[in-house]
Length: 265
Ligand code: SF4
Image 1 (cartoon, rainbow, N blue to C red):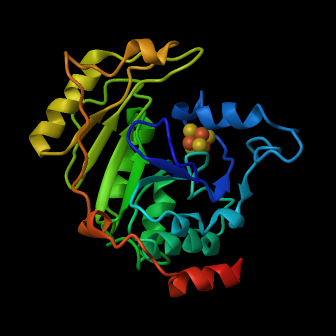
Image 2: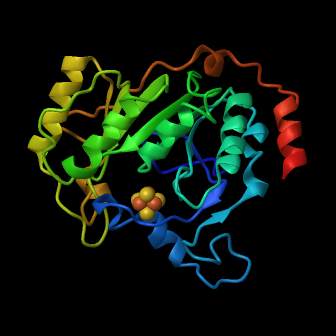
Image 3: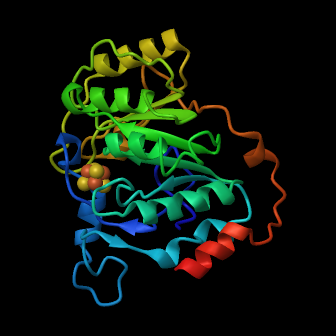
């Protein structure tokens, strides 16, 4: 787990899986792939195998080591629900989130159908937890809008959208049952432009549905220069934080699940 993340909407990242494959236009300039491939072939580096899919069971128990509550982006360098990850391993990752419940976990996927299916079955024990926020990526209408429907149809208690990189005007979208919307542009070489009118339209719909709105940087070749102001102000809104994450005793003892997971790996 990385204690300090530069991602604006989280505090830390946790990667019990590394690597992924591209599935839709939002993946075109995947920052995780660019980062990981820089280290392919470097002996002993965590990304010695580049962006190839790899389970990292030695990272499974990291959240238990963090005694104070944090917002944790799960698999910032991967996608938990990709086909190459077994349901059994996904269950282990989610079991840690359920037991180390003084953190808030932000699970973001482009494989929304598998997430919905598993939340109705193997992950039934976790969907209702308010310290696990389940999200889908939405970059355009064709790929993103069906993911919203899958999320809405799931049993997840806290649902969010990461509308990033936003590649076109999404039109009027149904935000029923959605608890948080993040919007941002694309950064780095070849970044595709973000139009302010597309962002304002999503903001208006968030206001209509009473959904918290978080605006990331505009993106572009120089992310820092572009900033995070939308019409003169920043938007840093979040869903309500679960009480357990706010009041947790900071001195945890290893739970039964921690011990079971430890035995299993
Ligand atoms: S799903 Fe996410 S991690 Fe995987 S290739 Fe696409 S952008 Fe990268």
